[in-house]
Image (cartoon, rainbow, N blue to C red; front, side):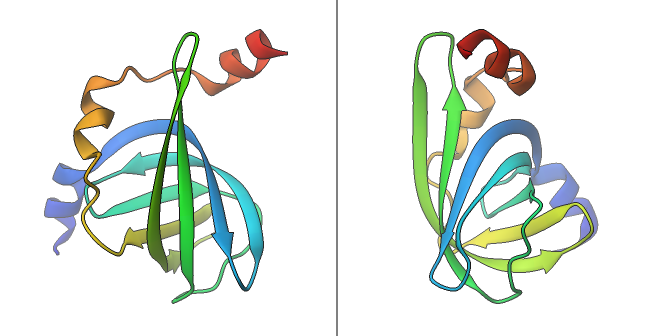
Length: 112
């Protein structure tokens, strides 16, 4: 997929994410952007390229949360985080265009 197609198909979105791996355990991160076939997340812990993982994307509402579980593979690492591709296209992709984006910092403060 070319760079233009990747930019066009991606949506900026902030959500919490848990990444579970048999090699690295559970890693917490934050989604930066997402597409129907991949996600980029900020995280401090290093995953390994090619590593198969299970992800749980947690979308925060005003008084509830939605959890989307999906399997994927680590395809790219950089200084800020990792890009992971889903093993199959994300069925719940339309949720990200309908579900409002919330500021995660405000949610942390209001739930404390």
